[in-house]
Length: 396
Image (cartoon, rainbow, N blue to C red; front, side):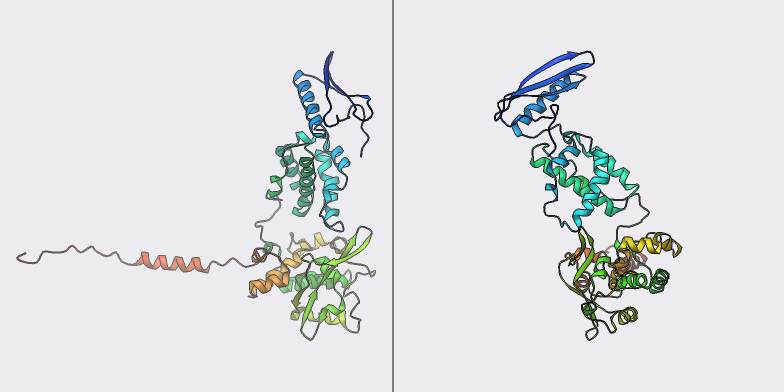
């Protein structure tokens, strides 16, 4: 906990405050005093402001502090220091928390850390996000907004603020300025197997392991960390199934190996295009060995692949400027969906908890709309029928 300076002391709960104000040449000095209930010493908190409205606001803030025990004038940076890691409760400290830590340190605090927590507004947060959207990907934006929401949730619990101004900001449409036409993961898929082979071969010019990573990630519809977590024994040639049971990645304190994101092992069928890679990687090797490792025997991460293969310029040359490493998983999922794999089977292969997430990979089916148009056109093309008026029979 940061040490309290005389200017930053917070009145304890329930103490009686003695306010006074003194006019200065440049404004006013507002001060509150109280007796500490434990030490019995006289304590003071003061500030220098320009107007009487600010004086009254300061007195109101100190009165609220004496009611709640929280300092409503504390800045976001000071509040983060005071609550330490409390905002990380429930996070996976080996993965998610690291990204959130970086987002808070590198983007949130530089943008808003100097502002009093009680004065942070949705508009301030929106302007910060507007700036981030011009420079960062959707995943980085998520890792910046999420820790801000969590920190301000703690401020609500401590009665520093009454409502979280970042709560609804988490539902904003992220990265709207990025060059993309749809939010569907299909938009990030490689169009065909020939293009995938070209990408893998280009990566293989740097090292064979990069070629193999591209093929495994795409044709198993797997995340990069899941490819790194594969063992030789996960490949079953009898059933022609690869079992994705864990993920491996560098984390705090070293290499982290744990269950997949969905926390369940999932079977993926071996496609013909992947057989040569898997046979080469499994032949004559022990089941417990890692299936794939990098040039120096280490774990391949998306960051190391990007650097080593000059990924960003490589995908531009291949006509795939928006392809990220995670787009390889989107590629495999899209191809399986287009091949007619039933939705519930596709969900099992991808490990999605919600079938609505899996449904995003389905190709939009407009055939029923075309059928409706044909029916309407047939109706409209019929000649108009004349209305026949009834005639009276003779003698009636």
